[in-house]
Length: 251
Image (cartoon, rainbow, N blue to C red; front, top):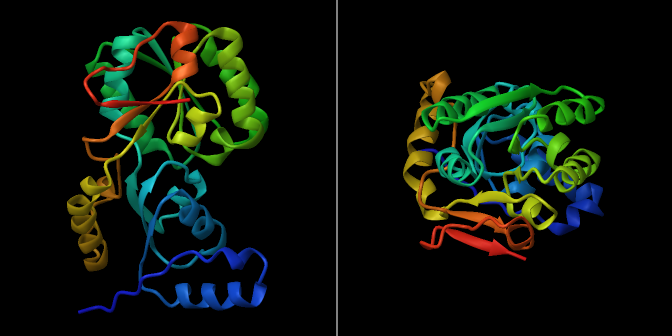
């Protein structure tokens, strides 16, 4: 049986380069890194190049990492749950912005939208300079816009532009984590941590055996979590979150 080591991400790595070097050297000896949550995923995507990674509960992850061939995993969002909400609250055209590496996510959205009678207008972005023109184009005719969880789109200047556009045009943003909802997105999804165990175990086992199918490399979160709703925008724009316990308001 393979040995399993458990690591936490020490805060002191940011100020102690020697400790950071030792920590990275230890990680680089691993056959596979299983990385849970956005902060550890961001660290590994920035610092580790040559070790296969299986991520869990990822709301924000770079498209560069997804297309590297070294990454597999399960996202933090459930596409069906988000699209069910969109079909009820903002039927019609859904705008979709994503980066290279997020093609499987875009395909899930296309197929799920079609099943719900939604149309999709999409833009695939490779550079930050493309964001204003692309989002302006999506805003023409879209009743909501979904931003894939690449930091290019959901962090920094990219998200600031998207948020300002959303407020000025009254077009809700759909995002991948609570952080974006707290900063101006209308809706995201929070997965149930307990739902990851079985699908993660199956995929990690297949990955270690070398027989994980290409179309199973990435997966949305299992059903059973909750929608995260921006309470201020819900009041301002007059939309209501589900009242069946499947959502949580963020203020």
